Image (cartoon, rainbow, N blue to C red; front, top):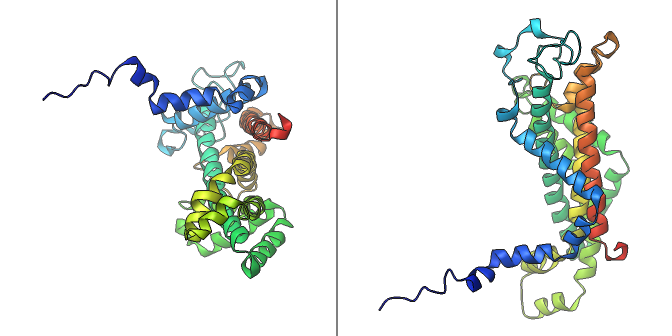
Length: 322
C-alpha cells in the first residue's frame, strides 16, 4: 500500500518545522528586540562582522600574500598610500619596510589577531568554567585551593601573567620550533591569564543553583554529580559567561597586540596587527606614518566594536537594566 506523503510539504508542515519555530522564537525574543532598538549594537555588529569576514576571506580579497616572501620586492618598500603624489596604484594603503602591501598585511594580520583572540578566550572559558563548576559544587578544601590560586593570580595584571608564561614556554621550546609554535604559545599564555573571571563568576552561580529544588530532586533520584553539573547547573550559569567571553575577546586581542608590539608575539614573517604596529613604529618619525597608522586604526575599531557588543549583551541579559 502506498504511503500518504501529502502532509510532508504542506504549508502547515513547513510552518511547524523546528528550525522555523526556533527562528521565529528568536525574532520574538527580548534579546532581538533589544538589539533592534540599539543603533550602537547594530553598527558595532556590522563592523565586527565585516572585519571578521575580511580576515577569513583574506586569501581571496587581499591583492597580495604578505606571507610569501618570494613574491615581495624590496624596491616596493616605503611606498605611501595611493592618494599621495608618490603613491602607487598597486598599493592602496602603501607598503611597509619589506615591500608588503599594507592592505593585504592588515587583512592577514587581522586573521591572526582574531585567531589568537578566539582561541585564547575559548581556552580560558573551558578552563575557568570547569574549575568554577567543580569549586562551587564540591566546595570544601578543593574550593579553597582553587579560589586561593585565583586570588593570587588576579592580584597581578593579566599582561604580566601572559608575559611570564610566554617567556617560560619559549625557553622550554627548541629554537627551531619557536617560530612555528608562536601562535600556540600566545594562545596558551593569554588563555591561562584570563580564566579567573570565568571561574569566580561560575562558582558563585553554581553555589546558588546547587541548593535549588531541581538539583536536590536530581540527587534524590540518584543522578550522578557529573550529570547534574553538565545537564542542570551548567545551562543555568552560562548567561554571565557569554558576556564575560565577549568582553574578554577584546581584552585578548589587545593582549596579543601588546605582546607582539613588545616583540614576544608572532614573528615578523607572519605579522598580526600588533606586529605591524611595532614595525611601523620604527619608521614613524622618519615620515612613514601609514605603516603604523592603518593597522592601529583597524585594531582600535575592532576592539571598540567588540566592547560595545559586550556592553549591549550585558545589558540585554540583565533583567534589572531592561
